Image (cartoon, rainbow, N blue to C red; front, top):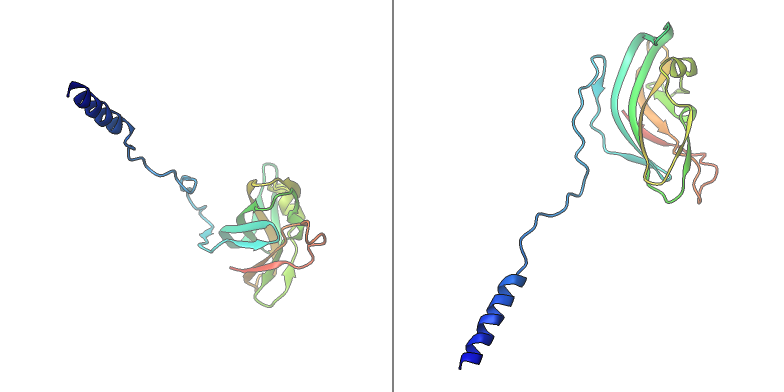
Length: 175
């Protein structure tokens, strides 16, 4: 009898010790702190879009800027500067050579404008960079478009991939 009682006590003790403790699930997203929108900028709340292995998240837009200022100079626009804040993320398995000079701003008349390279240099924004697997980069793009035009879309080019070495077709993301 004592042996049976001892066995029951041991079994209940082991069962009590091995019961799973409730745990909180691991977060499924990174918690990034919110940041203040710049005074001349409008926050964009658009879903991310992809071109090849590159995902584009557009964060903020500023249009109608008459000039930009760098650390050593002020640079006037021929028309108006448009600035777009964005994040690019490589969702593929290989690196992507990302070229900011290929990103086109399409205006409300359907004209595609390349980035204004002098503005990009003055604002110290990247020209090209290796976007590694899972890497996320945030930066600004600048264009100089006619004063009477409005920005309508970003024609985004993610860069060559294993299945599309030329990356000739961009993805239009409406603003």
